[in-house]
Image (cartoon, rainbow, N blue to C red; front, top):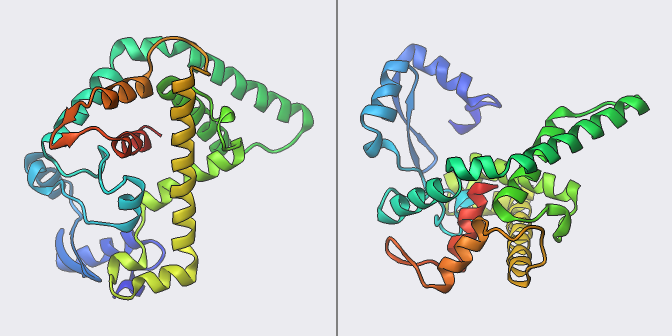
Length: 258
């Protein structure tokens, strides 16, 4: 039963594996689930038979945030996914790109050190998890998007909260995932549905303003960044896999970058 998994489901499933073995099949609501609890079996699933085991269940959170699975992380393994992955590796994670963002990393690290130093002078506590998240987001925004989130519709606190919420929605299940007929009502009662819709709406507004900033040229630097590349591909009606690159494709890809 779902309620018996508790707050630490990985431990509950591990205890079950001690009784039923390292490979178990469960039904979590409507979701068929295979639980692997040994390194040897995990290697068979994740490496030897990776192509046969890399599919993911259709979940509400990832579907909403990825614009119906148009991103890299949740897209099915097909020609679109292969071409998209190749493009991201070549344009975003190349050695040249990594070296080019060194000044950005230096600037954001200096801001972090200055912030911690100021807190030390004031003798106030520092939440390092929040600080390092802000550092990561700051470097990512400037390196991949060419803008700082301070220049957008979201302030620093709201942006950090939005990123944390997005990670939560991507990595968690909702009642409607387990029970499609009536689970949506539970999500509505708990407020999960409202929070998820707000996060999707705020992220969409961030993407749109970022696109406007790129079109207007109202940002630092003149080199083409990842967003410039995607917008240019959209204007050129570039085909990725099964169809042309659209604005929703771009937003889904940027969600992975964040």
